Image (cartoon, rainbow, N blue to C red; front, side, top):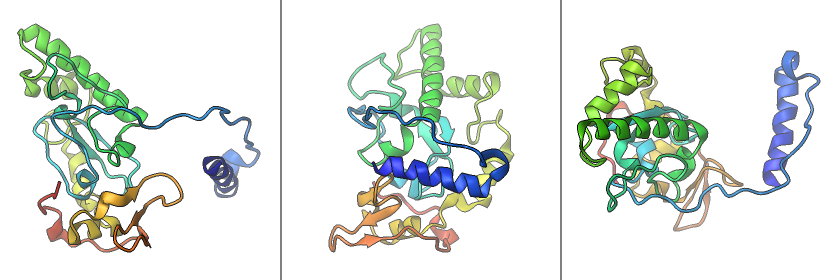
Amino acid sequence: METRDTMRNALEYLRKACPVAFRNAFLYDIAPQLGTRCSYRLDGEYVITPNDFAFPQEHEDVIAWHSTISFINDNCPIEIPYRAILPKKTENLLCPGRHISADEIGIDYVNLIPQCVGTGQAAGVAAAVAIADGTTAHKVNIKKVQDILARDQDVPLPRNPYTDPSYMQNVVDHEYGLYTQLAKNAREKAGYLSGVRQFGANQGEIVDSDSKSIKGGGDAQLNPNLIKATPQH
């Protein structure tokens, strides 16, 4: 019901803010059946958590570089590593899509269609490279996978020679999106993001585990020295 109200509010906003396109827009239908956003998730070689959004991560095995709907870093792109689609105990199995390796909070940010497309494309390339080289999914030449994605398939990857460097410069210029209050608080208090909720009544807010009080996610100035802080997983 909450989502249905949000849809109506969004439509009303669009009518006022973008009258040329939405003046006569109306809500035709709403899906009658509820869906489940999250269920089983991969137990992978790397687990994505909210700290991946509060502390910039540079992964040598990055296979996707995506903006996500995250209040923590103001939707700035994060790096999704190959290890997040690689099972710990099963060989020659890659698991891209909505169930990639992430904790119960981090999965909310990385289970949307762009991440399904990006990780799926990378998984296909990795499988092809592994077969061509006669190796396994765990031992695949990740540099070759990255170059095929960036050079041959126009997939932007950070620090890759075939990707326009202005993309990364834009991220740096915007301080990795870490000027939000949530990101600032994450640096000041270990474990602060453990209660973050991306969707629902407390959207973009933190529930303090001690006082159970709600803390807002408003803007704050980022100390540039914190950008390279060590993440606390």
